[in-house]
Image 1 (cartoon, rainbow, N blue to C red):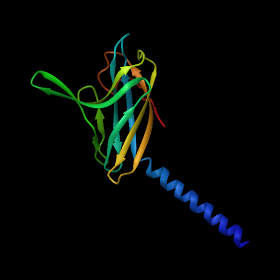
Image 2: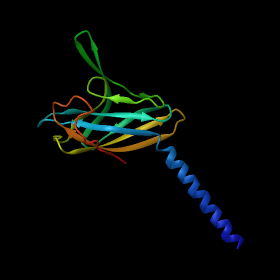
Image 3: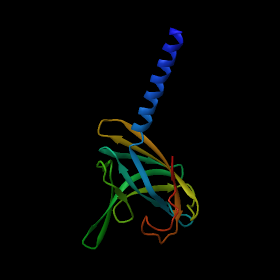
Amino acid sequence: MAVSLHSFTRRLAAVALLSCSISAMADTTVSEPWVRASVPQQQATGAFMVLTAERDSALVSVASPVAKTVQIHQMTMNGDVMGMQQVKVLALPAGKPVTLDPNGYHVMLMGLKQQVKEGEHVPLTLTIKTAAGETQTLKVQAPVRGLTSQSSDHGHDHGSMH
């Protein structure tokens, strides 16, 4: 009987550890993801969303099979001149939603492998690193919206996150 009790205790401890690691990995949420549709031969488009981290973290990379290169960018205005530059790391302060939209931080999908059409979904893989150095990978299916979409509150299709 002692052997089976020991075995049960080990299994219970393993389940408890697994539960802890699953909850630790659920630190960052993605809401309202979307990607702007492209026209034939267009080489780049943007992806947008709202990221909320429970702990101080950072978005360190994004990947997608629809593009050769995926980068985090920031759009800025200097007077009437628009500029865009790559951002290596996007800070995600604990508990504060960080909006990625067409007028600020956003994800650039460059070297598109095909046209991205309204009504489709684009898979995105986000890599988040916590201040403690833990890495979290989030998989998102972002709906594609029309070329004229400007904000993440358009429509009711909020995509899905796994």
